[in-house]
Image (tube, rainbow, N blue to C red; front, side):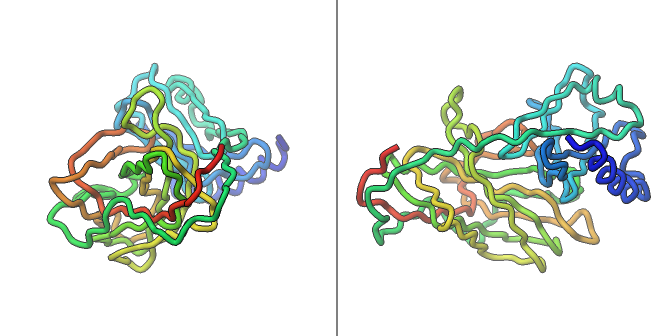
Length: 298
């Protein structure tokens, strides 16, 4: 890695954050920056979390993060990951031992192992709809709940299961609904996960993501176009919407997605890289896909 290049990049970030004491190791907070090991560029919106603990966050657009270690023991392990990079793990003890030094985390790029298909024919004109797009409901999933700081909820995620039943489809769009949005700007991510090889019925590894912005306190149905990504799938997968960041004068702004009750099911995790939990209800997430006339051949 180009150490001189890294020095100048890190120095610029340190100068900015020092003014607001973001790199202070005071109290139980630890801060740092995540970089691409090969390009020296900061990695935005990487997930940071602790398995089986309600504790996690997401890096911002400059790769910066701050995490509260108050409820963690020295033996706990923090994991840092982003699609397209190898996972990085470090114990809380080792992280604390760096003291007042800025924590520089380097992630190595990996080749994405997405399933490749040979298509014998173009998708037909038939469109298949999965999930629902309920605009209003008495029930909701909160990306940022009432009386909660948005900065403490980065990485919250809600997902639905999609099962094409071994009938190949090509995903064209994902739609979701915001029933309440008090944020001037939201940064969200749509994720696709395969099935967990150890625990059936739960999302496994993420193999696709798209980051997008929702501006001007938008409420209603939001459409993410995916037709140009050639997402041709025949096996069970999960689609999620993840809360990454926000811009707002009030950190307590509420953001909710309507949930149709009591039918259906959804999976949620309430912290970055947290455990998936099954809940009753069908969240307003809808997947549109075109159906292939012919079988896809791996």
